[in-house]
Length: 262
Image (cartoon, rainbow, N blue to C red; front, side, top):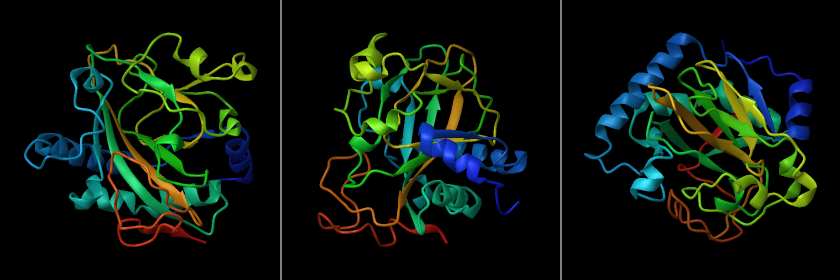
């Protein structure tokens, strides 16, 4: 399967709501390859000091295990990141001439002693001057509400960037605290996924994932895409200051490869 049957209706839904669910983007064999590679990364994470997220305290670890830029160490994950089928969806959703890679990240929400991921926007943590960056969140397991599926606030990307929050400090009123009054009546949508299905969401769309209260880990691979014309701004970020970019310069170079082009 080289191309996903993305339609204009899909693109318009994404533009209106700031997210979209797409089923069966990967087949079972492709998912199993990713699971095995991710298991190897988990085994290697201390040996290679893999980038494990912005915080190492015990509280944040209960949100999820986060490993970033695995594509640079594991050829199987590099192949996935360069999967044109996935990247072309991102390009078409953004109506862009091309999309680049910002970074990948494995997100594993372990069972039992698990915390929710706070409601937040992504863009406010990214070193990008322009909005439009988006993430593909690919399920590698059955992702249910009990396992901590993603929730989205439809249309919230139209609010623009709001102040960032502490992702490891979750309280029940987090959504009420961060959303303006005009959006407090908008009902969040839970998106449960089968392995190989995914969501794409705009970096400004408010989203959340509940705790994993089951006995089984919830594994996902996220890929973050940069639309053409996106420029760099100085900003502290989990992946560090990569590529020796100057402020205001368009992203380019081998650390940010073009993954799909019109």
